[in-house]
Image 1 (cartoon, rainbow, N blue to C red):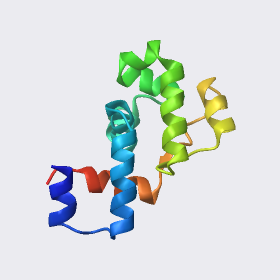
Image 2 (image 1 turned 45 degrees about the vertical axis):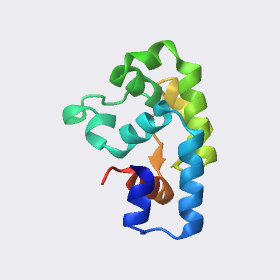
Image 3 (image 1 turned 180 degrees about the vertical axis):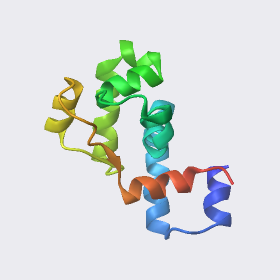
Length: 122
């Protein structure tokens, strides 16, 4: 499906498509799940902004209980996504955020939004 999407709608040049395909090969379904959460403010902030001042980590633990028992895995996913430049954050602020001292400062980058558009089913 992804290859068909990239062939039928060549929105991105060949180099960008190659990078995106390599990321698809590298990432797990959890990486894509995390990106989807960041992409949808209704999920990330909670219905009616119900998550209030919860840390980024706490938000993910509320959204999916798997992350409540796999915090280091979630942090690894954040690191992978930042390394690929799909999300942006200052690690110190995420650390402070994880200790409930601040609001989330994690956001999708333009290339992160492009990647999600690229993998979206046709």
